[in-house]
Image (cartoon, rainbow, N blue to C red):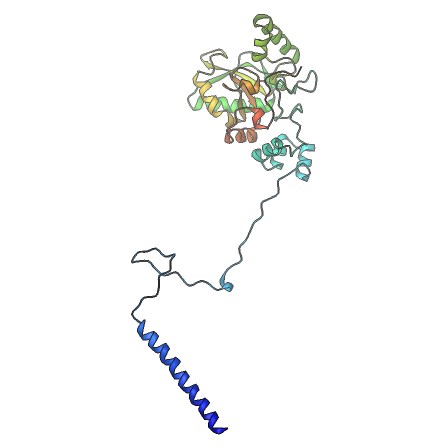
Length: 309
């Protein structure tokens, strides 16, 4: 029994010595051999080894911010703004011009009525007429630009026009004048009848809105002319310095050129570079930033080349 124990112990000692020698031999034989390169490191002589990986405890947990939910008509701020606030308040409650447009265009804001008289976002075209017969908003005598027709506008529109006119002069384009402003529906009907009598109904429908379908009845539209000493005509406005300046800068003051060249199939009207429509600063900025060319596309509405009836 004692002899067997001694034999086992001897075998164990020999095994340990052999293993220790093997490790020593491996270490001495590889002492001058560089460690293998990390395959992810650049293959050049000055490549540096990667820093040691941090321990799990040294890492901060990542902060993941969830996207803010889209504002809808159920939001208390939207409800309050629609009930008691201004149009700008409503747009702000939705998160600004861009989010407001997105919600309306996607159909996710049924509380926003695009045909409601008095709203700066109202859409008036051949498909959507003014829903309140004989409607005219509260108007003021227009003083924002040279008033050649004793025209009237909404007060907010006239104030924005004054800022735009001052900028046009200051930036070297020249003075703006008013050729047409707000119109009653009966006056609009007379204009359309005269146009149709002179040029035929089809031509008149592409150049003059029928009664109840004119943006001029909202007090939000103005036809401009260039004034340099005397004033020109609406037909010459687009090629004037003022017209070219307005085409680029109107959005800065809350306006858009409503009937641009090349979009008759959408708007239903021939180009009118003189016809400006006020939609407010927030929406005009979103309109310009999005590269929109018609109010129909801006709000995701179908083209309106023809009247429904």
